[in-house]
Image (cartoon, rainbow, N blue to C red):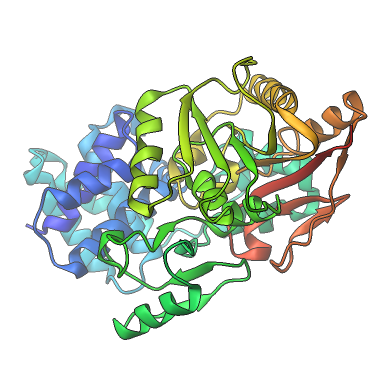
Length: 436
């Protein structure tokens, strides 16, 4: 039995029961002794199958006489993962993917399905999705790029002729980037530390950021235990840098967990001033506290607080970070589960985002700055929120942004990252200044 392939099916079944793909995979890897090669194979096939699920299901259904939903879930998962290897992994011979899939049937006590799995996968291997005729463009894009029609419609509405390029960008593997904790070590010193340990890195356009070329646990990277760095995407790092935080200032991170932006703010302050990190969920506040302790950031305090509700106990701040809850469309490459998330509640979400931004403005000092950011590219959650806020709050104006990342969209100082143009997460940043 191929353990890695069996675990792929195990993980797919667990995700089907509402598990989060990253947590399910981590648990599987931690619970079994495997080579680095097998771990990489497991990760590739599992994430790839989740990512391409809608496409895989469409192709499988074309070659079945009964609905896919009527088959045993174990059989479906075996076929999905087998078909992913056939269609998207050139290094895996077709016969090997099919034989291994058939061999998994008895392992999951589905011996009677061996013939079906063999026949269906053999038929599917020659299917060309590019030649398929669909009932309409939205359906075609949804199936071809394995994302639900709600998301396709949002992108089509906002970006028109660029829709297909944006959907292609959702398959770009995000760079693994870290933020250097310059309160403990300089960027140059950390570069030397990586080189001394034989680890390759690339400089990134945002100050204090590096792409680290590393497979395995983040804890194995030199300097983790010492708190020399933490993992954070370039877009999130840029959002904090756009605030231009100065030493001695007071910063409020209104939707702080898991804490990356609070850490970046504390580093910018060089352990001066203060950072108040808020979240309504105590366990998530513990994540921030643990992270700050590892990094040795002594100017961070946590507070259980809901961002949309005004808290009269909070003081006035120089800088407020509003990284609001959002649909997450921009981080689909990192979280493939989001591909299938219904967008029916986006309007409700936009109302929450506006409430948080409006509440944040009440905590701001005169001449203070609010950074409004999201990890989505949906204009209803981004530009429209900011435009409405500016219209209803004439004492605020947009600050000019000088984003060092190439190919961002900068429309009236509202910056949008699109993955296919930048290679980074889809993201939105606006910087608002209170004039009086």
